[in-house]
Amino acid sequence: MALTVDRFRALARSSPWRWRTLEFAWADHGATAYRHGWIRRPDGLRVETGDGRVETARIVTRPFEGAYVSSGEKMVPRAGIWPIHAAVSLDADGLVTALPARSDVDYVAPFFTEYHWAAMLNPVELADSGRCAHPELPVRPAELTDVEHYGRPTWQARVWPTRSYDPRCDCCALLTGRFDYGRDEPGWVPEVESVVRLDVGTGVCVWIRHLYDAPTVDLDLRIITVDEPLDDALFYSRRRRGLFSRRR
Image (cartoon, rainbow, N blue to C red; front, side, top):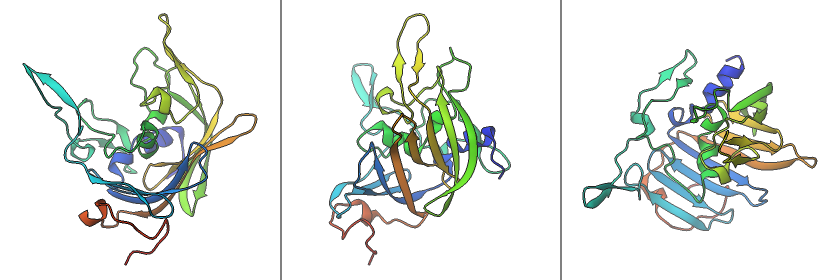
């Protein structure tokens, strides 16, 4: 696939449909210690520290787990579907050209600690904005380059968030800045440019470097396996031997 701005944006919105299981190691927010994660979409999650201590291991029971809505005089579980059950339009390269026009798709599960986690696994905020008041692209990609990240094909871009940048959570955005809630024209106020990398095979955001005067790496993610079978037994707490231990 030739790398263009449109294809970069399409890859950024394609992750929910490009893989089913993922094993990876990652460090974010300047951390030096890497965690070890396994995801089986849509329901399975396991996270360990580098020395094998289990931080979470569980199977999600339904979309929007833990969310309830009012129905008459009682609260009922919020109805929803997984992304895999939502029809999408694909281009000739299998990339998503537009997200489903529906609000009942749970793109966040399985969730871990904060929305930065959800954004790195599904970096759609680099492609689209949910705020109609700002018609411009949420991100301006430049200097697009094919690179490798831990041996995997990756698309790299130098990006600048615009006023219409619409992260899943203001405090957990992939890019720098803050949301200005001014009455006249609310929108994103960027700080500096960033260099980001998207894994071509999965659409996951695997690297972010913010270009401050002293540039900082805010995310480094190494993909270990993709679409390998992951049994239910993995998603129950038990100690393993460490970050890169071999399964028995």
